[in-house]
Image (cartoon, rainbow, N blue to C red; front, side, top):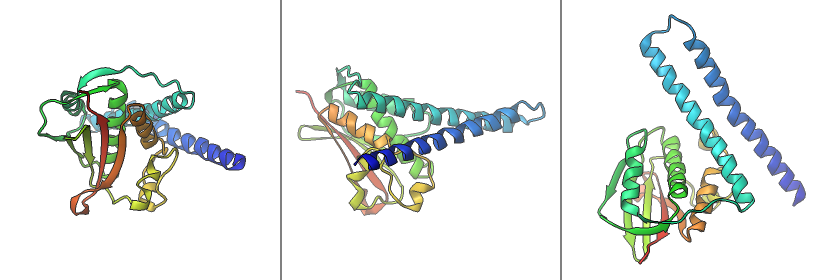
Length: 225
């Protein structure tokens, strides 16, 4: 078990080094290009957007590391509040930097949750959906089932094999196929989502969409009375 842990730890360090080097190299290249005075304005705007994208990517990586450290030490802060889950989701979708389709028949549904952590979990799910759908906007929806509030995030990505439905929420796990290797990742995003969900006595699950058009992640949180 010790040898396996050391191997896992070494693989993680190598992966994180690679993940951080890529955006740093990209930021440096675009920064050097922007220093030139003869860059057309349209191209300059494009480079700035790419710079911001890589900054967001690095921010998410660092955030993952910080969250992982807090989880390992059982020090992840929890600030529970009484929230209207429908308004919360609508505001989340409106504040997203790219278009998000949101559908909800619910007007009001109350949960007891930490807004910062739930937003972090939703951010990871939406980023994941965008990444594996080649940038296509995921479909977001809300439903109430019995005593549960359900946030749904549907993508148009390659179908996740059913045998990995539970494994994808484990620390460092990434599906061993060409599609996954084509995209950068640490194997931490869904693990952190799973941990945050457990803190809220909720559930996180994945299934295939109707007619197998992609994957559907469902974040379930208990409704308050």
